[in-house]
Length: 126
Image (tube, rainbow, N blue to C red; front, side, top):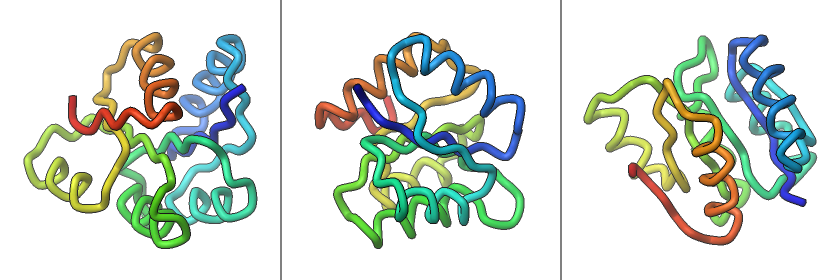
């Protein structure tokens, strides 16, 4: 079973997302609401995959991604964003995100992306 942590500043999004993942046999081992919490969760739980929102107040997803990659350059981090700008896309590539899921997303495609990334298939910016 794939073990994930889910981090988004929207509490309801995290709850609904986690419930759906667990229905689909993906084990949610941690939940957070900031990039800083994502780093703490990653360091303590070492999940297979991290689902991380990009735009969050204070410690954003860029902070989380950069610091998780400092802990483990091979970490599998899927970034979730509604920001379609070139600057965001470029920064996520530079920080070596494993994949990017754009909001609004189809939940089944999220499940597919989690399994692909977990199996070593990098789906950055598809």
